[in-house]
Amino acid sequence: MADRRTFNVVVLGLGFLFIFTAFTTCGNIEQTVVKNLENATFTGSGYHSLGIIYGVFSFANLIASTVVTVLGPKLTMFLSGLLYSGYIAVFIIPTTWAFYLTSVLIGIGAAMLWTAQGHFLVENSEASTINRNTGMFWALLQCSMLFGNLYIYFAWNGQTEISDGSRRTLFLALLVASILGTLSFLVLRKIPHEEELLSEEEGQSLLPTRTMYKHRANTAMQDAKSEFKTILQLIKTKTILLLSPCMAYSGLELSFYSGVYGTCIGATAQFGEAAKGLIGISGIVVGIGEIVGGGFFGFLCKNNRFRRTSVVFLGMVVHFVAFYLIFLNIPDDAPVVFETNTLMSPYLTPSISIALLCSFLLGLGDSCFNTQLYSILGHVYAEQSTPAFAIFKFIQSIFAAVAFFYSGYLLLMWQLLLMVILGFAGTLCFFVVERMQNLTLDLQEY
Image (cartoon, rainbow, N blue to C red):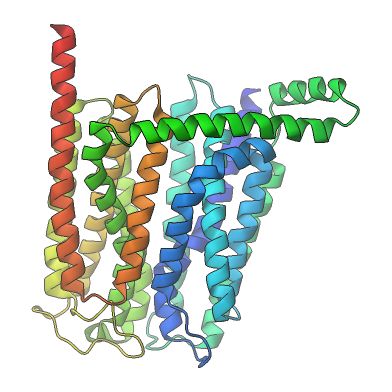
């Protein structure tokens, strides 16, 4: 039993490692790739595509649990993986209509995939193994930021333009990785209690499959209605309303480090032939910052209210330092130039070391906010954690989508200013919520 569950968790992690090696790398470079397409009929925007993905993802989350309950997590993850692979395949022979259609489909697939992953991980864990299994899964997942970006560095270093041949080779490799990750879900094993449940259902009907899915659908609809009512109740609470600015900020900075900043580095004319290769190195360094922050703050600072506020304050300071250095180091028109490299000059002579330092700080700060938002939601809504996390992902994804849509139009300094304002407001609101929890605890003890 234990060996089978451990096997499932490892295979699950490897599947996500392969799929997100493809998707994370794609998200990091797609605006740069679109800018360099030798195709006059293609009119798509990488920013708009990512905005559609996160926008659809936010709403698809509301029905994802129902779909997973009906289909089961294994089949849901496999079908979602196919949608991810379809999105990657579009870049091999890009057309505008397919680009935006698969953006919608992958938004739906992402919601199903992550919901199914949560279900499957819980099914294959016990109270004594849930922390270990979660750690194993996230360690494998975070490695997805390393391998694809490393390939980008070696393949694109020294190139000023991305040729069609180079693009096809890259996305064929990413497609193979995504398909391998999708196929790995097929070797996931059933755990015994699922097999016993199935045999009971088979004994109750001459049409076991039809009856099983009908029963699952009815149960799922009831659960979905109940969960939606809970979400509507929670979203009106003072705690959720106060945490909303912090959740919204996590969406803005998610879009910035995952899709905008790499594009800015690749468009910086002063980096010369190294610019395109630096997109890959930047992605790797962001990943290192995420891993360092997630490991340190996620495990050492668990369930400690004082440290929660300290970590969020550190995240704000780290991000504000990064934003200031980016403002000084990266040209203001870097996010918005399309067919050319930057024409403006920043306040400092652009430095590769400063650019990569900012990549690390962006990843580190992001892990500070996300680990502590998960921590405080799990603490305040211990009995209603699923709808509370659904609200978090909804708000985060909506603001990530909005940020991707304006990223191709606003100069860099205005994007940074928006994040500073919302980040400061979000941190203050987080402090207020933490103070409220301390007062409630003190009153209970009194």
